[in-house]
Image 1 (cartoon, rainbow, N blue to C red):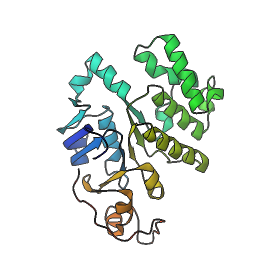
Image 2 (image 1 turned 120 degrees about the horizontal axis):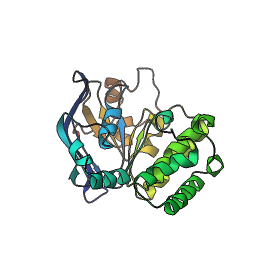
Image 3 (image 1 turned 180 degrees about the horizontal axis):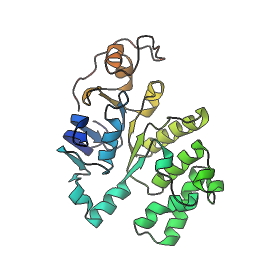
Length: 269
């Protein structure tokens, strides 16, 4: 953590079990600095998506603590209307499956939903929506129903519904999953632009080949739901033994980043 003067997110010794029995996170600790791009890497089921949901205030740790912008984020805290509105306006989450996120009758309604719920005046919302649709080059979809859209178009609408809020932090769950190559490349470029504009980005990904673009720092989850390593993309991609041990590659995988083996920090922070 080096970009910001203070951590924007602080996760301390967090554990979580689904239905109280199925472990998803075990004693996870991490800090994210303002302006950082952090990638969460690990095999399916290791806890990456669960951590993103905790960072978005959709789930709450059973043990340990989570602080955002210097304040504890708890179920009780988010019941406070002022705290909730402040947190929701500052953190945006783009789900892996756009169908889980896009539900309004039209694209325009979908993108307007968040700012209207935060109490912005309708003329302000209309202006924001128009600007956001234009920025993502989907103004022509404004009156379309979500079920009429392709997968790539739905992804753009889901992102628009988050960016219209102008959040400080953007969370992405497998951002390039199931996208065609052109849309995936567009999204990678957008994430780079958002980072350059000062946004903090935390994402879960399997896309090792684009890691240099997606992240400044990587946190590696083991299959027992713990963070076992931290490093730059170059360090992580250069440690084949680590990638094999956490089931991110198999023996025959050839990475297109042929770095020499380098030492990777085994500290979770």
